[in-house]
Each structure stands twice: as C-alpha cells, then as structure tokens.
Image (cartoon, rainbow, N blue to C red):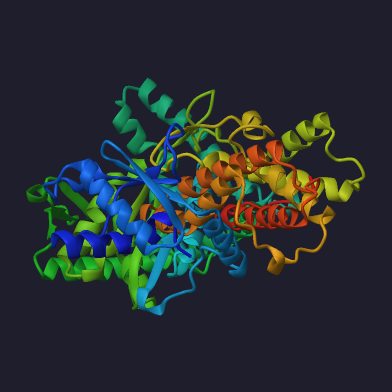
Length: 593
C-alpha cells in the first residue's frame, strides 16, 4: 500500500524521461486547496528548475498524461503552476479494501539485509530512583525502538547501567555511616528509593563539612576537596577498583536493592530491554582501548599520569580519558560499551543513544574517538539529543532530593485520570477493578502522549492536569475516540466487505482514506528522524478527521446497507491504525471508556 503521491510519482518520472529526457524521482505534492476542484495537487513550479517551460502548459501536459495513464485519475485543472488532480471515488473504496486486507498495515516485516539497530535508553545510575527526566528518556527510547522496528529493521533495546563511580560510592559511604544496618525490607521502602535517600543524605552532610572548613579559612574548592566524607568516597572508589572484598560485597548488596526497585518502575511504565550492560564490566574494556590508543599515539599521558586526547584540530578541546590515579571516567566506560555492543551484534548498522542534550559535547567526542581508533561502524552512531523536562517550580536536582519521582508521578497520573473520568461520568456499569485498570491506562496514556507529542529536541514544561484532558491534543482524547469506535463496531452487524461496491463516497470519507494511506510513510519518516512526535501528531490528526466524519455523517443510522457497511469498515480501519500508531508510542487503548 502506497500513499497517493507515491502511486503517481513513477508515472511522472516516466513521462518526464520520455518527453524531456530528464530523470526526476521526487515531486512536491500537497493537498488541493478547498477553493479548487481536486484531491491532490502537484506543484509544477518545483519542476521548472529542471525544465524550461511555461508552468501552465507543462501542467496541462502532465495532467492529460495522468488521465490517460490511470483509470482512477478522473480529471484535472491547472491554476498557475499548480496541477490539481481529481481522483475517482471507487479508487478510494479499493484502497480501503487493500488496507483492510493487511493485518499489520504500515508495519514492515523485519528485513535481515537492513542489519540490526541498537537503541539505548534509561541507563540510570544505581544511586537513586528514576525520576521525571528518566521517564522522558525511557519513553523516547522505547518508542523510537518500536518505530524503527516497524520500519522493517531488527532492533535491540539496550541500556548501560552506571553501577560504579564516585556517585555510587557516596550512597555507600552514607549508608555505612548513617544506615545503622537498615534495609529496604526493614524500612518498607523500594530499594532504589532507599539507596537514593542515602545519596541525598551524603550531600546534606557533605555541605555541612564544606561550610565548617570554609568557616575555618579554607577556600570553597579546598573545602570541597578536603571534606572527610568526600575523601572517604574517593578512597572507597579506589578500593572498589582494587577489588577490596568488603567494598565489593557492599556494592553488590546495595545495587541489588536498586535493581529490584528499577524493575518495578519499568514494569509499571511498560518499557522493556533486550540486553543490559554494566559500567562495572565495560570500563575495563574501555581501559584496554585507552592503552591501545596510547600505543597508536592517538592518546597521550600527562606528567601526573592522566590520559588525554587532543581534539583541538577537530574544533574541540583536550578530553580526559583516565584520571591520574588510574580510575576511569564516563568516557572510559562509553568507549568500552560501544566496542562490546559491536562485538555482541556484528551486523549492527546503527546505534541510537537516547541521552539529554546536556551531553551533546560528550557524544561528539565519543563518536570522534571511535572514528580515530579506526572503527568504521562509528559513522552509524547517533545521539538522540532531547530537551529537559521542566516543572512550574523549576529544575529538578537529584542530590538535593527535589526530583519528581517516577513511581509517584505514575500514581498521581492515575489519580488525576480517575478524578476527571468521574466528573465526566463515563464509567457507569464498570467494576472497581476495571475502573482502576482504566485509570492506570488513561493516566499512563496521558503521560506518554504529553511527552512524546513534542519534538525530542524541545524542552517540555510538564503539566499533569492538562495532559489528562479528554478534549484537545491529548492521549485520553485519542483513547476515547478509539473506545467510541469500538462501541460502534459492537453495535454494528457483521461486515460483508465483499458487498461493498460503491462508486461514490462522501468527501469526509475520502479525507480519512487518504490519511490512512499516508500511515506507512509516516512510520518511515519517524524512523528516519527518530521522532515519535510524528506518530503522535499523525494519531491526533486521524482522530480529528474521524470525529468530524462521526459528527456529520450517520454510520449505524444509514439506511443504505452498502454505505452502512462501508462506513463501519472505515471506522474499523481507523481504529486498527490508531491501535497500531499509539502502540508505537507505548500507549494502550481501552476497548471501553
């Protein structure tokens, strides 16, 4: 199934090759303006860069050719440099039949020749629970993975768990000093929240020590470096890298608490992974890569023993790769992780890193280093850089404990959905269990849609209440329309699609079919641009078209059985595409609402 423009383009290419001996394969089409007759418009002006001709004459030549070439191109008219084509109604009827015959319309089967695409997302630190920023990361990464897969490429959903480093040691030191042997089980707290509390406690006590040292005459930088808590965390990091048993055992215990908590959050959010990598393992491979780079004179050592790369000739600067005490930095493990992933997926033809835009420079450096090390696959690496999520009260700060917790947010979204749904009175006859499930579906759908409808590069000001509105460009509005269509289908008679042989249909029916035909293209565009926003806004526009049709044209009340069957089939296919498109966003659509 191809969009109308794609069905016309090959014939245009043939005509121009035969008549003007030029090879053009891409054409500019647009929807015909309402004041003119036609279904689709070819912008003839855009061809004048290749052909020296009067646009009106050229438009008439092309129009006459298309009418003779396609039985379903009924007529045409030319307005200045615009060729307006009228398409036969029975063409749209046939197109709807074709859409109905394809169970997974728009979604391509996996093509092994396209190789494997890896999509990394989440990649949390094991010193704190997931928050609102992580939610945007997870939703973006998971949706991009689903979209790329729908475009016909095998996808591996992956993450790197940042389970080592000074930030991890801060939580460990704080628990040792202030935990008094408590555990998540003894305190009745999720493991990630439990450990996160000690990360916040470390920051609180660390600030007290800094203040005391500055009061005694130290500069701020001196106080930060010499504070006893910070020095303990640094010593613990060195002990961990040296494999000191007691430190490693504590590290394993606290990380296990966190992993158990993360799993609950991922399940509730509806995201999954195909492979997991751990910084505690990949940083060693990164160290080996750094040694290789030193021998190749790509990296260099400074007098203090630290290892760097000089990227000034590439318009960047010098980048630290290994500290003077031999401990690794983020770049160390990212180099090792990239190489390990390629070894695990030798047919990899692309890797998407879903990471906030504050790390833009980091990924420029990472990709450039891998290229300098001679890895050809480094050219296929892409940083999906996204904007931060802002709140009315300002920026979130993990170490100060001022974040919006992911688990709490999902609960709050369900409560908001429940409140609005009750006010609208849409839940009569449902059991309390079904209501609770529906609230979760609506709340989560609202959250996901609110975040994913925005271009990834843009910042988001998150407003939970407006996201659950049942009208406007929201997830619940789309979910409600889907449920409305299911209600229509339940009331309709069985569809005898073979009897649908209409030769004329309403304009609003045509508009919907034309838009359904665009769905495969939208998937390909969204995959190429790594943009779930294209899918989100397609879903919303399709819903608007259907609601306009529903409000103006009778479906079940239509007396002509052929037309009634046609409209039920059209409704069915809209709901099919809606379920598939929202599924690419990770959003469930309820059968009743």
